[in-house]
Length: 211
Image 1: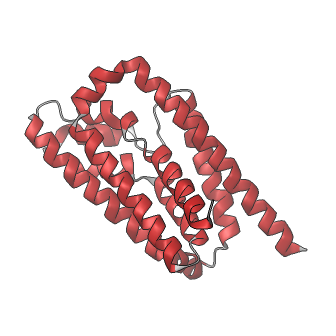
Image 2: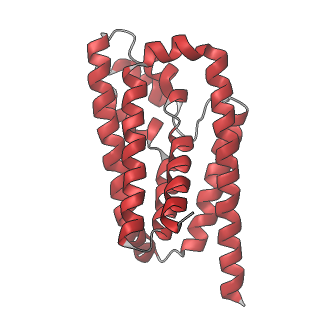
Image 3: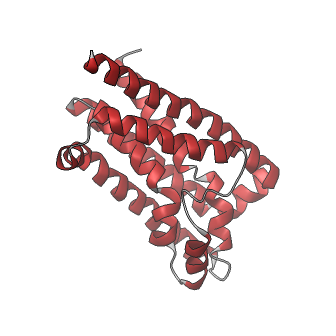
C-alpha cells in the first residue's frame, strides 16, 4: 500500500471516529425539537460546511501554530493522543462526552433557533479532539499530495456529517439507542488505538532526538 493511500486511510478513520456524526444524532434531535425536517436539513448542510471550514483552517495553519508557540510536533502528538484517549475511553463506556460539549452548551442550544454552527459544528462535531487530530495529521502531511489527501479526508467526513444529520430521524429508527451505543463503543476502541499510536510515535521521536 502506498504512503499516500495509507495516510488517507489513517486520516479518514481518525476523523471519522472522533467526529462521530452518528453518535451526535440524538443530541442534534434533542436540541432541535421544534424545528421542521426542512429546517433540520438546512442546519445539517450549514453544520457540515462549518466542520469542513474549521478543520481545514487548522490543517492549513497547524505548522504555523507550532512555530508561533514554540511547540514541537512530538509534544503535540503526545498531548493530542492523551486528549483522544480520554475521549475514546468515554466513548467505550458510552458516557456523555464533556470534552466535546458541556450541559451548559446543550442548554444554550435548546434556546437557539439555529444550532448549526454553535453548538453543533463547534464544539460537538469539530471540538478539541477533532482539532487536535487534524493538527497532528498536518505534521505528517509533509508534501502537497499528502496535504491534499488530508483535506480530502476532511471533506469526505464533512459530507458524511451532512448525510447523517439530514437523515437523523431515520438513523435513530434504524440503529435505535442500543445500536448507536454499540457503534459508539466500536469507534471508541478504534480511536483509542489511534490515540495510543500518536503517543507512542511522539515518545519514540522525542527519545530518538534526545539521543
